[in-house]
Length: 243
Image (cartoon, rainbow, N blue to C red; front, side):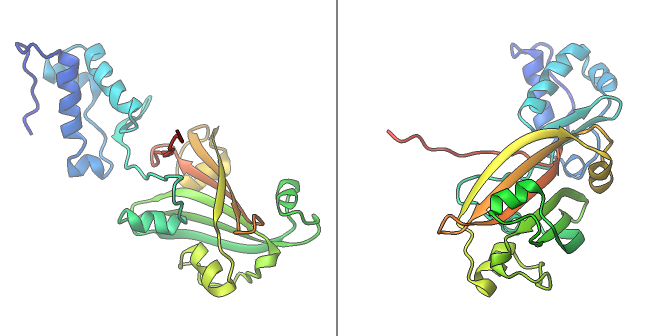
C-alpha cells in the first residue's frame, strides 16, 4: 500500500489522512486484530502533526470503525450489527453475517428468580426457573456473555441441544413462539466477572443489552441480559416514521 499523502494537493491534510486510514483498516492484518501503526511514527512518516492525524482518527472512532485505548493502541472494530427490525436470536444474527458462533462456556441451572425476574414473569420468588449462562463469540475470541431466565410455563428442561438457535428450540419443540422483543441498551464498566469472561480490563466499557421477550399473546417467556465487549459491536436501530 502506498502510505503517502500529497502535501501540494488542495485537499486538506486531515481529509487525505482519513481516506488513507479507511484504505488501511480494510487490510486483512488489521481486520484480524493487528494494532494500527504508532501515532507518533505514523505522523512522522506522513510528515504531518499528531493533531492532524488525531483529527482523522477521531472521525473513524466516532463512526465506530476504530477503537482506541490509552496505553494500548488503536485497532479496527470487527463489528457485529444487531438491528431491531425483524429481530433474530444471536445464532441467527451471526449466521446471517457469515459468522460461525463458538460457545466457550454453557452453564444451566434451576434457580430462584431475582425480584426483577419474578416480577417480569409474574411468578412467586420461590418458583425455580431455568437459568442459562453462555459465553459466546467467533473462532477468534469470546465477545458476549449472556444470562437468560425462562418462564417455567415453556417447559424447558435444560437438556436441550442449545447448539440450535434458541427460538427454534422453543417453537419446534415446545410450540412457543417468540414474537415481541423489548430492549434496553446501556453502558457499564466491566467488573471482575465480566473482565475475566470477556478478557478485558476491570473498568473497561461494556455494552449491556437487556431483552424482554414475549409470545403472540404478550406473555413473557424470556428475561435476557447480554454483556458485549465495546470493541466488538455496533448496535444500530432502524426506524420508520409514519406520515
